[in-house]
Image 1 (cartoon, rainbow, N blue to C red):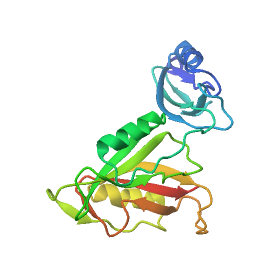
Image 2: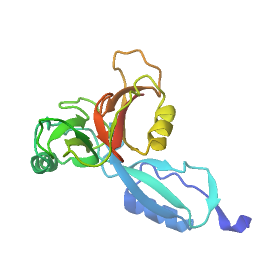
Image 3: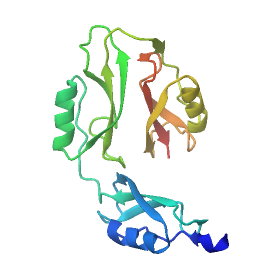
Image 4: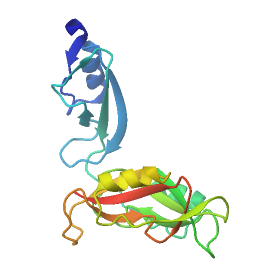
Length: 209
């Protein structure tokens, strides 16, 4: 069986074509899973990989990689109050993407209106081109009151969210939020605590880096 095992090569710094050739040479499969901004890795190069180099796996194993978008240049627009269609156009024009989407009940707000977003407008530091959106929803289906996860560890919150029948969406690392929280602790959540959320909604977190 040892003859069917290979060592994961280092792919960080390669372009996707080079990384794929390196992976295929060892009988491995490359999968570009995401894209991130990076101040240290040029655009079009692999910025991270999993498993990490040196790990022994069986041939045919998939290596998941992220491609660098280079230095962050996009500005996060203010989407609050916009319709879904207008928000989609606004995001696309800036070369950004829609990430996780959730819905909550907001009395007096027209359905399919953006009521929250992450990252927030004009955010100066974000690593992913994806913007998570929360839309207002019509009064239908099963609704719950969103609990508070601020101050809890990401692991603890994730367990609670999944157990309650919700989904974990975008995890946004933040460096200095002024709270003095320890690394891995949630400093903000979307939707916020106390808001009404629909069954199966996606919950996004800002986590201390």
